[in-house]
Image (cartoon, rainbow, N blue to C red; front, side, top):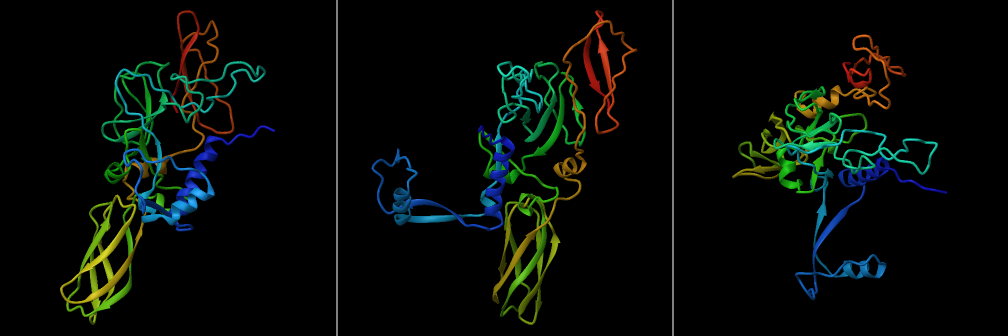
Amino acid sequence: MPILLCNQARTELARSFYRDIANENDFFYFYVARTQVWNDEESVETPVDSVSYINASRKNILMMRRITSADVVLMAKRYDWKANEVYDHYDDRLGELIDPENPAGEVYTSASNATSLRDAKFYVMTDEYNVYKCIDNNNDSLSTVQPVGTGTSAFQTADGYVWKFLFRVETADRIKFLTPDYIPVRKMSGVGIPLYDVNGRIDDIVVTDGGSGYTSPPTVIIHGDGAGAVATAVLSGDSVVDVTIDNAGNGYTFAYIDFESSSGSGAAASVSLGGLDSNTPQQDVESAAVSGTVDRIDIINSGVDYINGDIIVAIEGDGQGAEAVAVSNDNGEIISISVTD
């Protein structure tokens, strides 16, 4: 019996692995040295997937570091926008048979000859680190105008391409995770999405140990990969009893607290991260997203004898409200259909 592990399942497995680390369901470690010298430090041995090799490696570990939620993020292939290149438009049929009755026939293929969305170049990152999804590539034309803007609606550039802003790779993620081949991807809202997918702000600070000996409120030092958060310690007697958030900051995926003082010691607190501000571009896009919209209509057969102005495009299905306009040439063939709603 044939078995297919679809791309969506692969993605969910990666997210499950991510959640295990972020939610501390399991602990993961990365070891960086061993007690023996390497035979060749410039070309170390290839690891072997065997129980014996793994046990020997564990015995000889010299140093290790625990992997936390701050050390992981989901990644996608990196495609930088460049002028005069053809980009694929999003097509959920890639890899399907064009004629289901002919198992040996051709399958739907993108402009770059990809037969799956996993390999298709249907999104780009610009020099502003904004990521855009290609809705329509103007019949496989060259892309000559870089997409810009962070609006929630799809838009057309002068070269005929239709783009949709998805998200921006924020500074903290660029520094820590961005590589020449991959870009970090974070989902910031939605039902069932863990807080650890949120690139957000300081939501709450809870004092776990008040310490003692403080004669004045200690300075609250907020560490993390975001910026702008400011908080003030509150004393009762000589102990810290509360921390007031003066500025929640933004861009945090992790944060922790230190108390700095010339008098007392021992105070400790934990940090909870919240969601994004409502005016954050990615949050706006995800909040405005609507399932089941008609984004593009592909012409399978151009037909004959159509007259411009007399063509009615009837869109039938289980949704509602979609509208489109068709254009024909002098031979009466439909040459384009533009979605107007």
